[in-house]
Every structure is written in structure tokens, then in C-alpha cells.
Length: 216
Image (cartoon, rainbow, N blue to C red):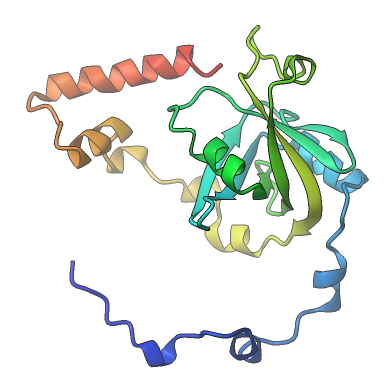
């Protein structure tokens, strides 16, 4: 792949220049931001089975991780506090490590079929409080830790991105088989791809079986 020809003279480098290129923000876009959770944001969060969690390293390097469970898995403890269970994953602990170094987080809640999303910004803490963790038990298993989010800003986000992407439109869904499996991609990236296709089939099957047994 050839290097892109990025011309520095066209880069936007200050906010005044940036804002001069766009129409003025509608007053409602600013007024809709709330410092606490209200009945509408709580109702949205309680329906959501999925969120994206943005965090940063102490040096400001960004990262986004995914969290998903049955609707209502994120607990509203009060109008300023949310709790997110940390389910079993790959044990890289990227997000949790980031939170210890830099507590600032951004959350994006989604509901299947809803084109609007809910955004929450705030600061996060990690808890091992057994009373709180017991609220998040699924199939008899509690998370090892929970992520507490102290809400600083919450607002509903418009539907334009979802309308443009047609994310929930089944007719726009792509065939997963058009790309290699996650195991094939990782093994190829790490130069460990097996030569025998049957070995790869077994690895893929083992991963699918692991999904069934290690979600909680």
C-alpha cells in the first residue's frame, strides 16, 4: 500500500478555524447536555444491552472497548452513578489499566432497532464491593470487578449516523464468511497460521465452543 499524500497546508490546527467551516450549533445541541441522569436517560440505559467504553492511557492514548449483556446490565445506582460489570475477556485489561491511570471515560449506549444513542461522559473507578458485584450475577457467576462511573454529562445523540450506515437494516447485513475468522486473522498476523486447513477448522470450532462456556 502506497503512502497517502497528506498535504499539511490543508490540515485544520485550531478551533477558530474549525468552527468557521461549519454552521453555528443549534442552541438545543448545547442545552440538551445534562449533569445528571433523568428519567429518559435512565429508561434508555435500562433498555440497552450494549455499550462502547472509551478510555485513555495516562499519556492520552485513546482506546475503545465493548461491553454487552442482557438489557439492564448497567446498573443505575443513583442519578450520578452507574455501574458496569467487567465480564471475562482476553485478560489484556486495557480498559481497567487505563482507568487506574486516567479516570476519564466516554460511554455510548445502543439499543437494537433504535437509531438514537445515549452518550455519558464522566470519571470511572474500579470496585470489588461484594454487595455491588452480587447485583450483577448471571448464571451464578459474579464479575471479578465492577466499573463505577461518576456521571458528569449525559445527552441523547441523533440518528444520522445510524440512518446513513443502515446498521439495523437486515438487507444491509454483510456475509461474515466473506472475511476470515478471527482466529485465522490473528494467527496469520502472528505468523502461526497452520498449513493444514483441517487444523484451522478445529481451532475455529474450539473458539466457538469456548464462547459457549466462558461468557460468564
